[in-house]
Image (cartoon, rainbow, N blue to C red):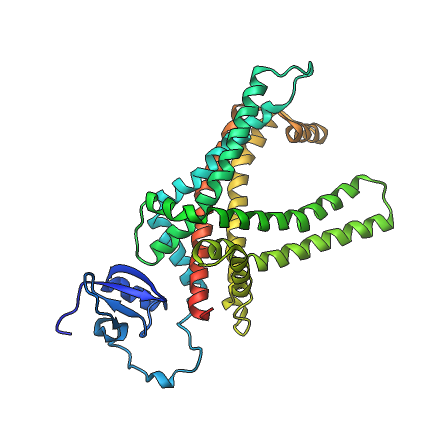
Length: 370
């Protein structure tokens, strides 16, 4: 070619990404997202060429004959640090849009939590105005949660994938593309969270309830068996559902196909060192996010607890105060502020987890050719 364009569009597996400049193409090449065999073209042109024909990108590498490549060759896998950095970069780039999408769920959730303390029926069994209003608010917010959650989930995955590929979609475009995915994401959510409830939460609650009964060796062994079963099922479900959100929103398949893809991707790469396997990387990302959530929640709740326990001078008083706070079914200023900060924190941090998993999902698919 007589001259090189400043902008290029990349085509991978039928999808087009860009236009992006040469510097961005160099970044994609370093991350393993652009290989010699990818097709590229100039904006406005219909002529596709191989990426290896760009000397600015591949001049430092000698082209290898295609027949020399082993069957099933894959692109370079990104390191865990590169995946984490790419996730942070995408999250920062689209922070405002990610926050808005998260608030679609967090705001109804906040109002629902604020309404719950007012749902207690008065002793005279006559519903008061606050109770009626609280019931109406709780019902409307619950309906909004059911409607907005699949939209928010799908649009977040789409936004992360677009930004990672160099596109910059608007919120309107994201919600329009998320609309056809609503049924699939809702169905997947029912399957995933229903499975966790059936196989982990219920056995755990049964085991905990057994501690209130009379102590016996058989009861202890049964409780221990239920706890072990719940822990085992949690691990199994985590593996099978590792990429269910990304496969559901980004994969062109059905709900059952998305679950199968999630399971296959999570179990791929077993021939690699543990630190390079998608499952271990996903577990590390989830564990890091959980630690951050716990730390932030403690930072929010601890000052409130210490404030409420001011003046407590004995262990008995502290125990009584903790029990009172645990069973309290009313709303005050401190409780409202704590709930508000907690919901805002989750609205900020949830998209970061989703973005990082999108990067891991795309890297796993690209490196494994699944």
